Image 1: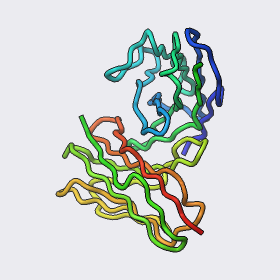
Image 2 (image 1 turned 60 degrees about the vertical axis):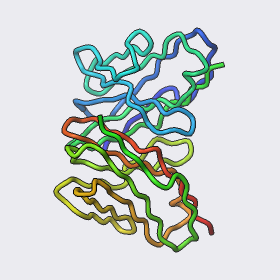
Image 3 (image 1 turned 120 degrees about the horizontal axis):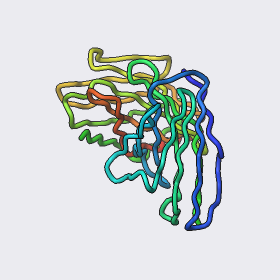
Image 4 (image 1 turned 90 degrees about the vertical axis):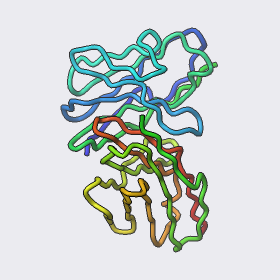
Length: 113
Length: 111
């Protein structure tokens, strides 16, 4: 498996501001992903963080709202921009090891007021 | 894309009894089926997975079965314990890396 950490673990933010979430993994991985989990809901893939190139976004998610960086094979950031209360969610990063096996970080719990 | 349905949404069992969660998927190309357990305040934890070339897999009190013809797979937890109380998610993956998740099942084990 992999040890994945996220910062911050939780935050309360004002609408209109932005928050950058960090994800660090203890080994080099090719595939890193960002998910959103709205309150009481399942997991929805936001984007794949590609090292050395632009992230690949899923339908319904755009780069202007969720810019992603992937400067190396162990680190990625997700920014939630111009936040509104609807952005209140748990944001999770995951990494893929061998054979599609994905491991998740502990999540960042975001509340937007 | 892949659509995964999960049932039941909630499940309450007596400690020591078995719990069964069922999922169906739509894309016949899906070949990887993981199960995750999410405890309150934590990220999802991979507990078991199965690939399309296998019909059943077991790990201590947890087992997963796969029926490719019917496109459904199930999680079985035997001898349930209070620490099994959590939300469980099934997922399916077609030929690429993406996981499509079910809606989740909240399992409560009554002492």
